Image (cartoon, rainbow, N blue to C red; front, side):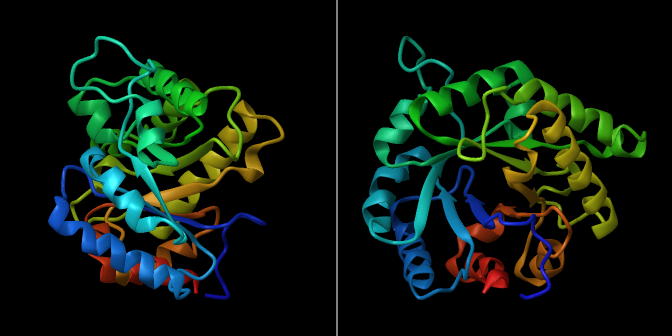
Length: 257
């Protein structure tokens, strides 16, 4: 993919969010991803799989020695305590994770996680030695009202810790109305948003804006990945349903071969 336009000097990242999907019987899919990655199937891209927390430890054994990292899908802001049903960043790290997805729209809306909560969890991720993939994105109503940029700008301002760096932070833009719907914004809309996000990172994190990767997510599939990954300031993808099968996930990652 010689004509891609990822940010200068940035290694692309392709992350798979399995959401609430996956049992032990699905571990062979992770093994297939590891085998394909070991054979160069992702080219220069870095690969991350974020399965349910119940699978991380077993997946870590499978991924040992392979060029595939693991991530969690959320974490609590505290390292431990009386928080029944929650999982800390330290627990994710101990299980074998290197990344954690924070602020996904399904968490923001379904679990009332606001920007301050996302920022606190990002701080927790940094504390545990994890890289936070912080998600931002607008709803269909917000885009139709012309509020997409202000909404995403407010999410960035409220969710990004000021001590973030390229080692600790990745931003993922996922228009809420495109997640799991089969709909995608135009490449012009994506380019506009990613350019805006890049500018906001420069503003909030002076001197670090060019080094932080910005992923696109929202109905990324093998059939559209090549076009989407060529958009300026798109440094990779956060993949949902298509990451559940090794063939589809590696077809998306394969655009970086």
